[in-house]
Figure 1: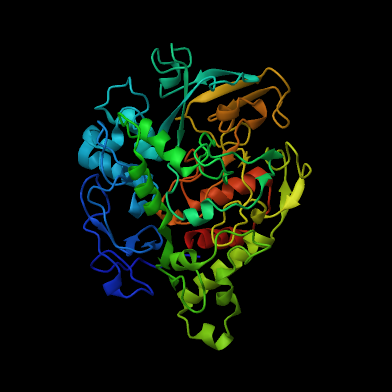
Figure 2: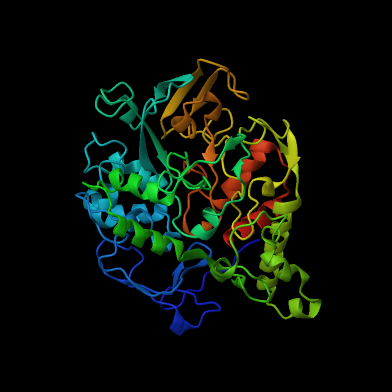
Length: 494
């Protein structure tokens, strides 16, 4: 379905169901560390398909001196540098490109440690930061092998256009061996759902849940792409020592203030430029639903996933007739997309975390909600990681700008790839040292997608349509053209 031309108000914002006086007009899309802005209770930003809205419980909040918004290390970064409100608390490639045009290498975003393709490259050149500028990717350096683990595979560099994995100081054969992979920053919001405990164990591996060393309690395991840390507190400390280059550990007070902010923040699409407010006409889309609803539930136990939009499908004919034609077409498309997401089944095969290790059979017939099953969020209630093939041959789309590794299993062959695997990112295997975990990645929320392209952990899908096309190729689903567009419209409404 074609969208009409965008209408943008003088502020560049849309206000939807929230009164204009209740929503802040930010002076600029980019939040630099130390600006001292007030984070309002409700904040709107225009994005690719309409308006993103952020809601802060008990807001507004003064950010002056707040540790999430304040640089406390030598590279000038704060948490907000890579978790921008206008990008759904992630970082879009478009924002990174804009910052390079405005500030070049002096912008803290492009700090050599992980904002460049490799710290040893000439930092003043654009090509040294191409993965961040063009693909929204941050360098993640993992020590190899993992401390205290003897891996059951060998890893070799096939090629590396970034040069970092073959670098004398930062590479795999350096005195302190590292593997550098490149990933998208994950959104920092909606943690009521992300931290929700859906299972008492990891059903994807048949193992106990990870334990938070600070509390001694099990945690959801749905935070980091490779599960290298178990909790938000551990994630903050990991980021402080790597991405933010803090010279000393964060103190308990700073940790508590960041936790408080992150756990009070909700983000989702609020307005579509064609369909209008996503909570209009009886629908319950938008961030307000996230803010007031109970923590994440499995769709079969709570509300079916994306049933928020059923009201648009079930509206009386007279009411539908009152909608402008473009509005009606969009709303009906989103409602159809929600049904396709839930009901269109296909064969899921050769997917670690589903078909192995404990397995539901190979193949198993199910729909998108088999993994994206949490009410209101579309992430996985069940903790653990899944290999969708986005980083591994033969399923991954070619990514000539990324490093390519050869993994050779020295113990049992991988259950789906055999003894040798070509991968852009071994994923969870960099944490466990297990060949069977190569390519497994923690699923993430589907909220705020229109504000934070590109998609998948390695940014390999530039658009929402590319996401759908990847799944179509990977699992031979048989989507019609109408179903593909309906799914794109659904995802743009989240």
